[in-house]
Image (cartoon, rainbow, N blue to C red; front, side):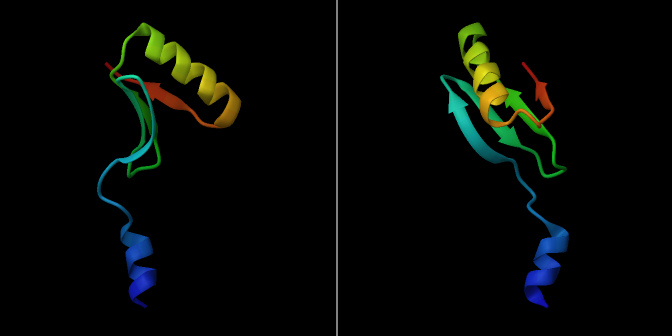
Length: 63
C-alpha cells in the first residue's frame, strides 16, 4: 500500500536528465520536459541529442 500511495503522489521536484555545457534538460513533476539555461551552442547540442534519443518528447525551451 505504501508504494501505491507514493506512486500516486509522485515526485515533487525536477529530475535532471542530462546536461549540455550549462544547459540542463530536466523532467518536471507534471511530465513536461524543459531545457533550462545554456548558451546557443549548448542549446544546439541539446536539440541534436533530443532529436536522436528523445524524438517523441515535446521539449520546452526556457531562458
